[in-house]
Length: 186
Ligand SMILES: CC(C)(COP(=O)(O)OP(=O)(O)OC[C@H]1O[C@@H](n2cnc3c(N)ncnc32)[C@H](O)[C@@H]1OP(=O)(O)O)[C@@H](O)C(=O)NCCC(=O)NCCS
Picture 1 (tube, rainbow, N blue to C red):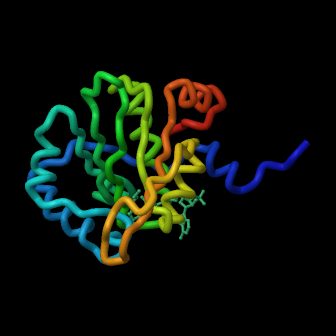
Picture 2 (picture 1 turned 30 degrees about the vertical axis):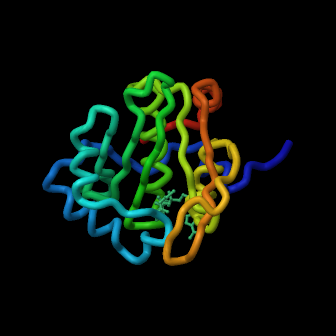
């Protein structure tokens, strides 16, 4: 019998508690400030305020503040796209957690999967991640997302042309993980 690794243990147990609540206009200063923080900028393509405002309003989008920690303070935000997709293919467009390494990202991703599959009827939940974003890639790997392929040199930034890895999870894979107790939320 093999001994479970520390990573297996972290994956199987319920993550720290987070809550997703709809983003309001009054949250946008916070959203824009962490999006433009130099620690996050290399990993995302920031939006204008008007794009966030549209994402709050459009029925095809869900824009959430991630709340966690003592007193459920704001710890980040995430955006889902394709919520009205006839193909039931939802995208995790963006996730930013400001207090890194504390488990909020994993916890928020678990809740986002639950929202996507249980509440929004997703058949496929997908995302892309820059090849150099090893932290996010490790999180998505650990949370059961499957690599579909690489969009080579598909975004241009101050770093030059960067490649994106496309990853996804299907409803059947989510159900199997849930059956194995890998989709616990706090
Ligand atoms: C990616 C991000 C959302 C993850 O959130 P987080 O709260 O920092 O992550 P967690 O603490 O839940 O850690 C989840 C996993 O990430 C990986 N990870 C965490 N810190 C890491 C580090 N310093 N280096 C490499 N991997 C790391 C580990 O696999 C970890 O799992 P483990 O704790 O079981 O080892 C967050 O770091 C972030 O906002 N980064 C900048 C923006 C970004 O990259 N967004 C995603 C774009 S696709």
